[in-house]
Image 1 (cartoon, protein in one colour):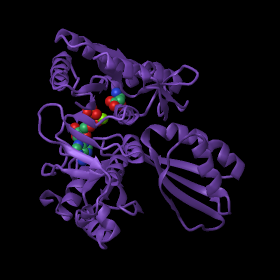
Image 2 (cartoon, helix red, strand yellow):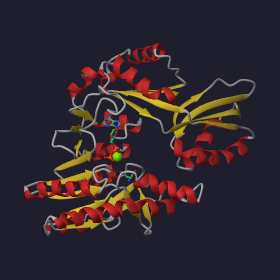
Image 3 (spheres, rainbow, N blue to C red):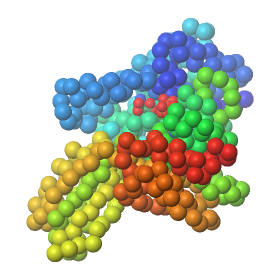
Image 4 (cartoon, rainbow, N blue to C red):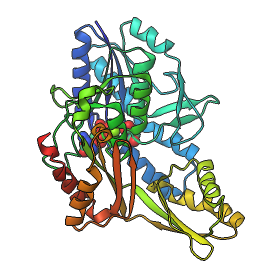
Length: 405
Ligand code: ADP
Ligand code: ASP
Ligand code: MG
């Protein structure tokens, strides 16, 4: 008998029929004698619909109220999943994030988990119940509902697997596992049998929404091995785990595209020590995540710099920069949302050269212009025209022969 944490994503619980199928699947694991803790997302589309409603009543909704609203999506599916299990004669109990003891910081809409009091769940498992937990949500220490960032149910599952010392953590989704690229965009993408935490993290933070990046970061930190697999079949999925030596033989393991970024260009700032520090401090104080920074050579005493921010944060970025420009005595901002970030990722890059050259040549041949470049030890990212992003992903996938990986 083992303890399994399973997470079912939005499509897997997309309507009552699917919820009933998920319940039957859970019953199967329980009948085999396992303790099962289940994390569910909102029905697919519900979180987006709630965000649209919030924006329909207020252009820039307050983030605390936003969390209050968004948490209801998961509250529907936990109750329905518990009821579906009852319908099959399985004892089950649902928990909101707060009831599950998931305490977070106060950074609404992207709160970090600070701790989990797993005692109530442990007690229900001991009593033979299947425990169903609402993904994506927690509670602040002063009792306010918080959410963990888009895709945050993955984090709920991985954090619970860690806290409950689960033997297995399974992330059920609508594809068979992690592929060399989004299989909806690159038709000949290959399913990977396994991938390292670091590669998965770079892919996730570069736009592969199959896993939420913060959940992978958490898994790596606490060494929670997990499997990404489909809720629609019993095929083996992709194991995400610590890097092992043979993984470095593959130079590029995947391609990711992120279309939810915006390019911020700041012009006419005084070219003096401290300008960049003030700008990025202002953005950091507003909890805005900045990526791909490029500063151009200053001329006539003024400098320009460009960087990317999440597309949802452009309004916040503009607001955060106003007092900085006032303090600097100059600065103008321009925001371009018609961009996308394309990344190639692989631990083999640590020991192989020529990856950048291969990528840049393939993009050049396909007529894709590169606006910004950034690299890490195992990733190369380029900022390109959003309209060309899918084609560019296919070109990069082919350039590294990932279809025959
Ligand atoms: P869930 O609702 O189950 O959390 P998501 O929609 O968040 O599911 O993530 C699954 C989707 O991620 C897939 O349908 C697929 O289109 C997309 N995806 C993007 N990149 C990849 C990749 N490299 N491998 C697998 N799926 C990917
Ligand atoms: N429902 C949330 C979202 O759509 C969380 C999740 O699905 O993981 O982002
Ligand atoms: Mg998801």
